[in-house]
Amino acid sequence: MNIDRRQLALPALALGLALGLTSVPAFAGADEDAVAKNVEAFRTAQAAGNAEGLASLLADDLSYSHSNAKIDTKASLLDGVAKANYKWTSLDYKDPTIKVVGPAAIVRFTFVGEQEFTDGKKTPQNLHILMNWQKQGNDWKLLSRAATKL
Image (cartoon, rainbow, N blue to C red; front, top):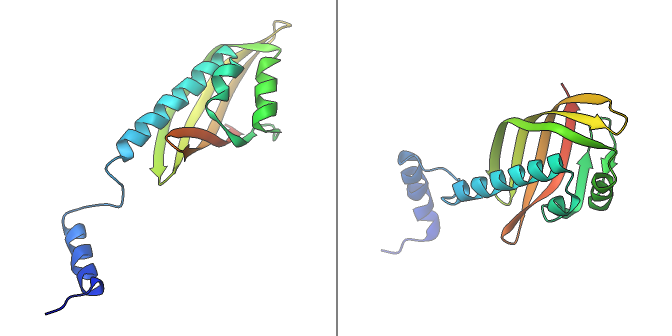
């Protein structure tokens, strides 16, 4: 008796469903951990105004959208951080969620912080953030970011 792949597909699918298997690979947890580590490294570098610390986390094709609709590339974001006329007095990423989908990761959180400008003015920030990270080789790079005001 000869059995071909098509005849095995349905029983294999049924067995997978019966066992509760999902399409999420076993290594998804490791990828989520790696993305979480990069998100925290990004927050730390952002809070410190450390453009060099951010550079290694960014994809070359970065699209970084601010809540005022300004769009930065990798080069313009790093230049803006290096030349900023403010410092962060506090910066937290609240309630982050991470979902890895193949070579992409969707990260959402609430961005809460306070900026102090060189003239002494303090401005609170409270935003919804969506980040998209892309696996490039063995590294996760920030490919895009969008912010909306609460």
